[in-house]
Image (cartoon, rainbow, N blue to C red; front, side):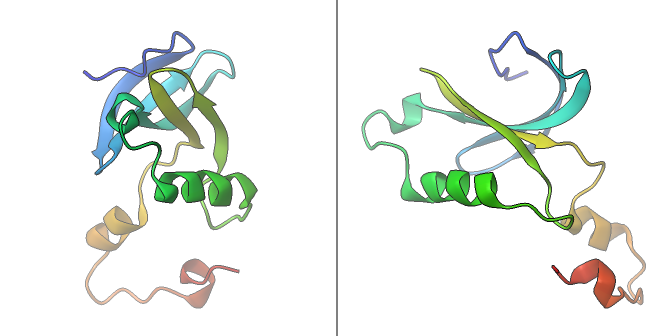
Length: 114
């Protein structure tokens, strides 16, 4: 299994993969809670630098606080990787929609970002 290479975290399972990195469910030994970690390897960016989209994501998520958005707890940057530490939730919007019956009505209070 790909690892965060950070002794603070105990990887439990890989839960996603994207263009720039992988997402893991992990246990944070510092806070004693389960978290989601989006790991991006810095080696990939050595020649080109960190993409503007990543810098934008870091800035927006650091300043965004809403009950409708998964909380970004911390960003850890070292020589080898960038770790986005998020609160862990059991499902994501795509899975929630996929497991719901086709004729399910979602009230505005669930789908509207307030």
